Image (cartoon, rainbow, N blue to C red; front, side, top):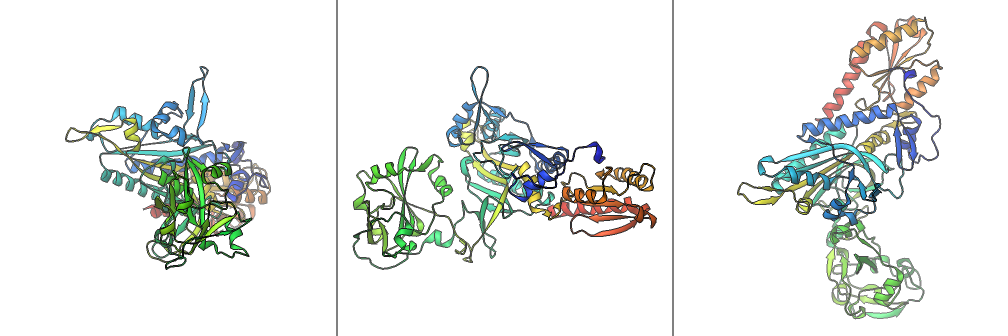
Length: 586
């Protein structure tokens, strides 16, 4: 490709809308352009890089035995109602209406569609296992789209769905996809690490996210450098969270009510004249879960993890109660709430307590009377707890649940997610098979997603420098940029550039020739901004010595080679870079 024959509208300054480096470089390098919030057009170079990511994904899915299909993006809401996700996923669903005012859903994912397809086509254990995948556009109604392709309303995703005869067989399918994902991201030049994850509205019994370390990531990951434990903070546990330690041990006196006028928060009670440390307080929260109240207790210095709560409840249909709802239920306003048995209404709402409180004594909690608290509270003796659960968010420095070493927390970008779904969808949507004994049983399913457009941007977020993008050769729009410094029609520079261009194409190298009538500095800046892995500089001074100059984008190493050897040397460098990524993937 010649530069003048395509469209590469580079920008010297980043648009104000771009908050993070990768978003800035997507725009500055002329890869994408914004149409509306969370909706982007791909320009020629961006599309080439995107198609390369798709090709790697497709090759590894095929290698793992998955079968490619293409499912409708327009889906009837009835199938979402049948699965139970019409309500639980309602916040992300785009709903559109046809000319007859019939409602449709724009696909954010395809569990329902693929399960119905399997229900119609798979009848016998002899047809299993099966794994179907697609690479297609998805739609999610993001309330706050941001960071370019990271959180978009329209995006491209690879989603795959496995069907097996048993839990054991499903685990094997899960492992194959897990290994395929490891290869996909390695071939894309991404450094990723898998972490245990919450299954969210997708559901299921096991899941892992593939994370790219990045300070701009929207996910927080807890990890241990000792044993390798890693989990999204929505899922992570620590030794203190799993077992709990009482702030004070021993037999406590009977609860004593005392006045706390003006106290409305944990911080208020920790200040003079009370001076009660947060770890000695019990935080009482009230949530409305599918129209019913639930009281939640945590230690005062802990934060409720709503993802853990959702997993324990089995629903995402919950919200914090309003002050009016709380007063009607417990007779007090936030700041004076508690679960001392004698102060709860009859009938009492269910009370869930975080494991960290188990066995705690000498605690302080609200008295369910405005401006009053209880001291000397023994959790086991004085509180009415219906259920214990891990409900808190872990913090850096807490002991690893496996080895006890301090946990660390880092930010990361999620690029892939694998789920072991079990029979949640197959039972509801009728995907069954007849086993060897003639008994009809539900298929055991798995589900596996890769954000293709997000992966593209994550590569940029991880691989850039002060001058622009530093593409891994496997996903670069072009592997080599030929940069003639003088473009005289009859000059030797142009003749050598044309000859190298044709020679590299014959070698199977993806090459772009910068044939613009621009100053060398402009060409250098644009090539570095776009991030071509190799640049070949061709100028009159170099040609006077019979040489051209090869510059590697990563590291900036420069070498001069003879004109006659240039094509062979460049091809060898590209092939070496290709092999290195393939070897890293295994």
